[in-house]
Image 1: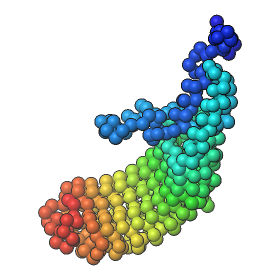
Image 2 (image 1 turned 90 degrees about the horizontal axis):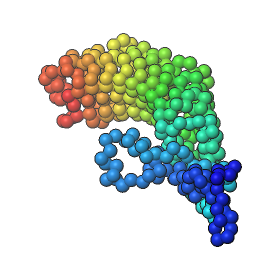
Image 3 (image 1 turned 120 degrees about the vertical axis):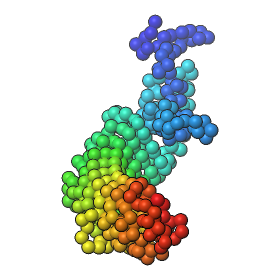
Image 4 (image 1 turned 90 degrees about the vertical axis):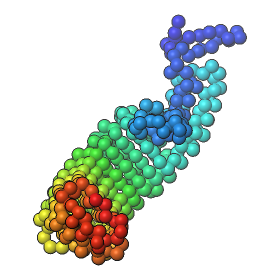
Amino acid sequence: SLDAHRCFEAEVHGERRSLAWFYGDRGWPSFESATADARLTVVGSRMAFEDEELAPLEDYPETFRFRSTGMALHPDRLARALATKTFTNSSDCDLVTKLYQETFDAVKRARKQNFQRIAWTEDRMTQYFETLAEMPDLEEFILAYSALGDRCVERFAEQLREKQQLQTLTLINVGLTDAGMGPLLANLPAGLRDCTLDNHQITLEDIREGIQMPRALEMLSIEENCIGDRGAARLPGLLPATLRRLFLASNAIGDTGAAVLLANLPVGLQNLDLRNNHIALEDMRGRVQLPVGLVQVGLGGNRVGDRGAGWLAEGLPVSFARLLLQNNLIGNAGAEAMAGPLSMLPALECVVLTGNTAITEAGQRALTAVLPQGSVDL
């Protein structure tokens, strides 16, 4: 029969032994599971795959069938847990504790942590934060597709604040709103370079004054959120002068917000993505001085017509290279209005106008006659 510790006794070579009955009570499986959780061999997984094994998978999320459900435990916590487990040889407890410490000494030098589709309970966060505190070399941190919410995101940010090597933070679909944006930004390391905050409920309308993005930030993505005109007008005040790439696709920005945004972008910005918003560029007043180093603008999937297309082309800086206007409302008049200003851009590489069904051969001729061969995609 089982004793109070869910073990049974047996006589082995004349000695009484306490043996584990349930798998989870055994020491070696507990050690092996903890080691597997600590070693994220494939992103989000405890299994290693060859390239040919991954190729047949129809979609990347299929790999999450094999994911680890845990994360690296701190050695002290695991040692306490192992002390409650049963080993056939009692000396094995010290052995596996030492082996796990060796594993952890390698894990804690990790430069990247990536957690997707993890159910973060209070206990799990507490356990992981003990480990995270031991990771001085962390350069990239990813949390995705987890129901965290503003307060839990803030707790993660507090843990990351002292990570001086952190360059990239990615938060995708973790329940972030404006209420959490202020505390998040206040805790981000000053040296952060890339920040992705996609697929949330962020509007940027209720962020308190004085809050700014990290001063060294070069890339910001806030795609698939709820940013409208007010939020777009608020955004320039949050951006550092170092920003080079700004991605705002799939929001709800219209002409009012776009006008303020375009007039106040960081002077060093090179890439601006405003795909799939509500922008027509019809009511722009005068020429906006776009950043002198701007190289690419993405406005596909908006409402840009002839007037908007002409206005935009006239305001592009001399360094400009790639204009993406697919799936808008541009016709021949717009194509003709763009042709002259675009022909004055020596670095122009491509103008994408696919999906603008009102552009006929006449509009195409107007563009191809003055632009570099092969640069126009209709």
